[in-house]
Image (cartoon, rainbow, N blue to C red):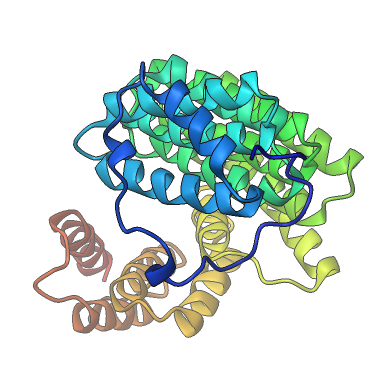
Length: 344
């Protein structure tokens, strides 16, 4: 007896006990060409839609377990299932397997098919599939951030994710996507694109009243200015960020404060820089970073002609560093130490 209605009820959170379900089904070995007939029989013979769901859920997990070694084949099979349920007007099941297609196609390096499946899932998904869609979006970002896609393809990934969050009306994640893109562009030296993405994130944050994103956008502006050597712009953006943190009652990041101290020192604002370094030394837990801060403080104190205090900071830095400390950090320590000795 066929199914009389579409899947309107919520699917149970937990499957039936394994003893009530076959751990493997012969039809799982069907080819893509065979799947439409197999799925038609499965559909017609299912007691209800929950029964059909768990049968498909088991098949989905079977395909997922094989994806690492058979990504291309998994994408083809998932696409066949999605197409079948599209023809039967079952968007819930279609979206379920479009997620599989997206994951397997991206794993196989087929960016076009993977992103198309991702965006189609976003277009047709049901509200109770939203979490899966957002999780997929995070994983799609992973292909950009971990370098699994070459840098000239990363904008395509970013644009796809942005379209998905725009489609589902998630302004916070849309703004966050622009922030991530800004950092990614900056990493590859695409400064103009980084600035443009940052401006878009801030525009969304202001329009949608997203204070956390607004704060992060100012912090990112400070980072971008710092990385391109604009100490004045970095200090201005960092101070704007600190003001927002103070108004919001939240704590600024260590990175922001460290960059601000370094920019202040470059501008010759030595007292302000030393004050920030001392504050950071009191709060950070990472031993190596604490040593780096002591070196920075020593350099700052030397320029203030506070040579005894600078020498103390150098000694404290030596005590904090160990065999795992990088050559560059140790070299900076010796340069500062030598400069203090020359000035003494």
